[in-house]
Image (cartoon, rainbow, N blue to C red; front, side, top):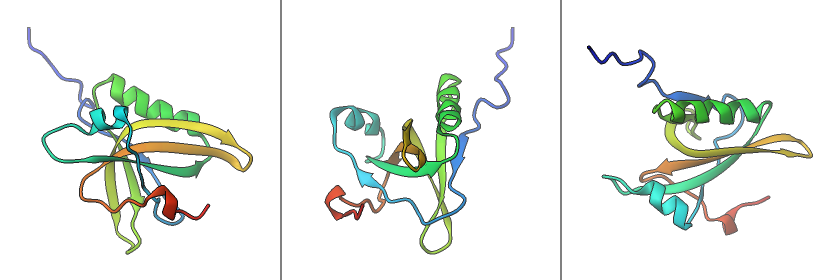
Amino acid sequence: MKNLQHPMRDEAAYITIVEGPPPEFMEVDTEWTASIAEGPFPATVAKCETRTLNGKALVERCHQAWHEGRPARLDFPQSDGERDELEIVAACWEQVSEGQKLILWVKVEDFEVVEEDDLDY
C-alpha cells in the first residue's frame, strides 16, 4: 500500500499582519523557550503582541497546523516596507479593554529583538 501524503501537509498556516507598524519582538529567556529554540541553527525565541479581531480563530489555526504536523508562520511588514516571515512556536490570545490581543512566540535567527526595558507602553 502506498503512503500518500495529504496535499496540504507541508503548507504552513499563516497569520498575516496587514496593517500597522512592524511588530516589536521582545526576547524571551525561559526554560521552555530554550527547548523550542534548539535545532541545527542558533535561534532565539521572541514574543510579540498585536491587536486582533478574532484571536481565538488565529490561535486555533496554529493549533490545527501543529496537530497536522505543519508549521505556523507569521507574515509581517518590516520598517522598510518589505515583508518578512518567522516561524510561530506558541500562540495565545486574551481579551483586553481595547478588544483582543494576540500573543505569539516566534523563532528568530539573526533578528533584531528589543529588550523589555526598552519598550514604551
